[in-house]
Length: 141
Image 1 (tube, one colour):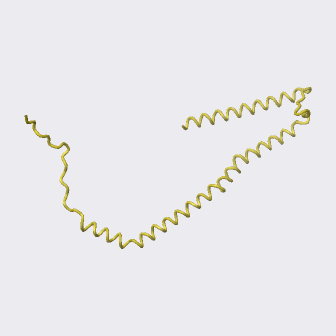
Image 2: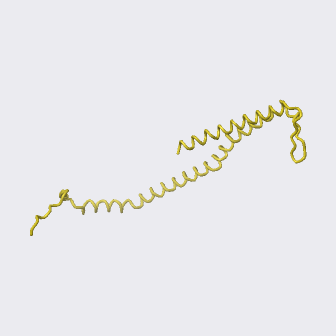
Image 3: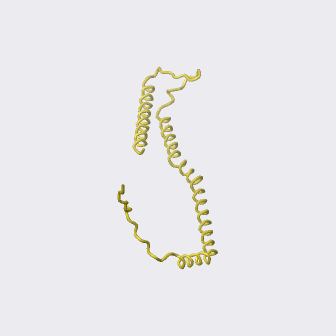
């Protein structure tokens, strides 16, 4: 199972890298061709305005998105789900230990009497060792 997830991780990272390279190559090609026009829903996209400053903004946006995905979301899940579950389990554990100790204190005379009765009434004779193979009767005709 570990190898399956490892291969899926490697393939997904490779696919992301190929997508990044393809996007960069497409960006370079669009910047190199002055007569190319992209039209979305009848409106032309201004390719000439997308130069170095927009690239810096895009890189900063990608870095901010990566920080949110890698840092903020796991911390939010940890503190909003993991911490309340941990506190609930700890509280239930303390309650269980308290109830067990209270039960041990309340029933300790009964437990001691039961132990004394078992010690007095148990069979003290050692058991005879059992044979591995029971004796077989002789053949009579």
